[in-house]
Length: 502
Image (cartoon, rainbow, N blue to C red; front, top):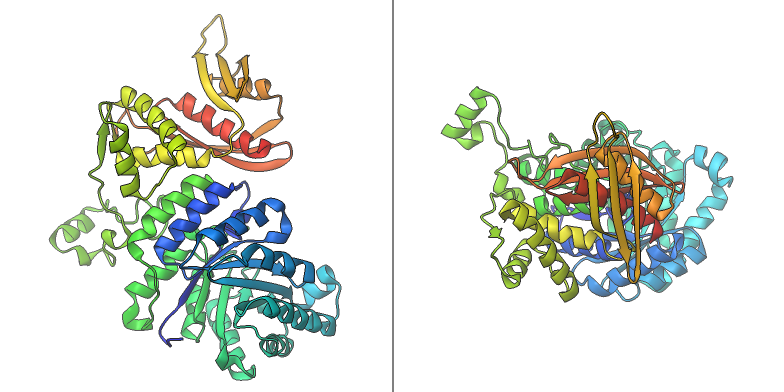
């Protein structure tokens, strides 16, 4: 391993999917994984196969499709978990099993209810079993930053003795601060026998907003793998943000002297893809990938940038793939032109999906006149996002109401040979439409949050609606696009419900 090379371990599909409301289908996971491979991610943590058949199937299919990146499956320190993980990744060109067990006294006492000696044996046995399946084995002592250092060292030495090739040090609850975390990493290098022969990794959570800072402190202390997620997705406040880690190492190479294998020009597209497929919008002021990241409102800043970009920009927007798109297609553009532009954007739809996307493209082009690259991307993602959908919105009619009558909506939904039409009234047209969908499908759905954004500028812009619902006790996110906000909301609402029905 090169001393100046930092390996990027992406956990968007595993820890990122644990964000409330995210529910990705196999097709959606494949799209994200293939984009992560184009981005140059070294290791893709594809899932936790023992948790569900769906996760097992997704990891199995990813393993068959991904050839350049390592495909990693997570497993608790249980033989059945490790066996299941191997079954899922054994078809990968580069398989890895990642096994973990808690080492902090608070976890041992209240969660595992095990002694230190029992946990030490669990670590030893799990790594040994995983090593019997494949050469690439990662071990994590969960809640490492709140563990007794001497016990942590013993567990790590046991993992090395059984053949672990990567030792990951997680700040599981986002408790550490940078200097403290760097001290933990230095302590491991100084006190763990055999540490020179393995890769030391870090996995930092963002509960105190320090995940990226902690990860970088660890890297300066000698860690050479960082576990992170696109857009900083993950449980609670999320994980270290992949794009922030990568661009800090790139922009501050003068200070850090380190490099990654990431193609940074794919960062922006990866961020948009993950955002649209998960339904989690990127905040405008998000570092590196937010829409304001390269915008300058201050007159002083604008003047400086116009004279010399580097006066107020430490990164070139093009370095993260933020370039103005010259793609414009109109209502007279053909199916082949749409296919070419989609492939140029990195979306490769099957024949049936392409036919459906082309039909939808024509509908939108008739309303808007012409579609930009961002609009075309939204059309493609709508068909990736609705993979496996049970119900489709085929017709709707809304009335805004007045003094004599409240707002109302009539919707028609179809699946295969089944068709259902329902009418409802509500506080507004969107409310009435959603109530009609809920009545038609006879599901209990509660709206928690809704956001509306314009994909491009102008009054004819395509609207992008994101909804977070609780459907039959499960929190899900849905997303829909249309030039008509009511239709976009109906598509988002239906998309969320379909995820539960799926």
